[in-house]
Length: 237
Image (tube, rainbow, N blue to C red; front, side):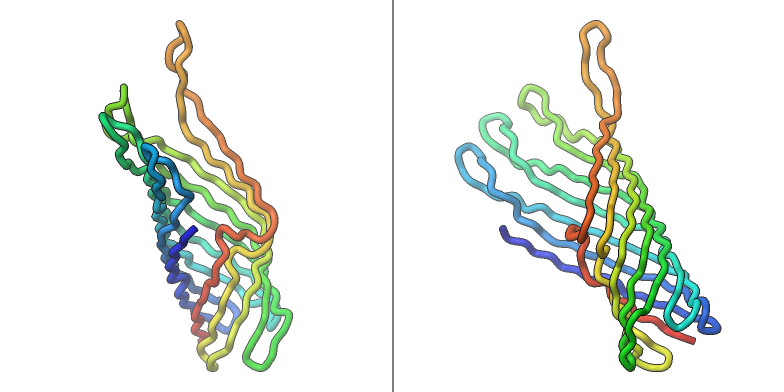
């Protein structure tokens, strides 16, 4: 399986007042194409290129307790979009139609940071972080009646999650005023996700009944789905 992933993740700026309070933020953008397993299209083998895009803005505020400890929080928003092609038999042959999933999510992640090793200008730290994420999105799928494509059908989706994680990082003091900080993705921990999608079914006599379909995803360990290096530049007053 071929994967193409481009990531420009996290350019961050921070100011520190009285070497205690620091303010900052990060910006991340990523996109790419993932070729999925081959599927059958009228007897021919074809592949599907899934396109993904995400944009993240995370302001940050923190308080440095001493040389080894700090507390802080990231508060921000991110946008994601995934487009997956599929093939449907319409008329006399197969045609490609896209399913698009997109959403806007809000994040709040307080953390406790402990710097456990320092070598000259290089420091290693870990953030004990609690993550809260919620938002809304939509799923747009092709709509067919008796083999005829009549347009697209859109369903709203509600999303919420919480997590507990240890996120490792490294900091380099480039100068008296500037330091560079890197974090290893979402780290090691536990993630609980809930997705709610409206749906309907038809019963005799009663007719159409509306209901919410809920899906749950629980992950424990190294979160490989969101693993990546986040790099930030801090400016210290």
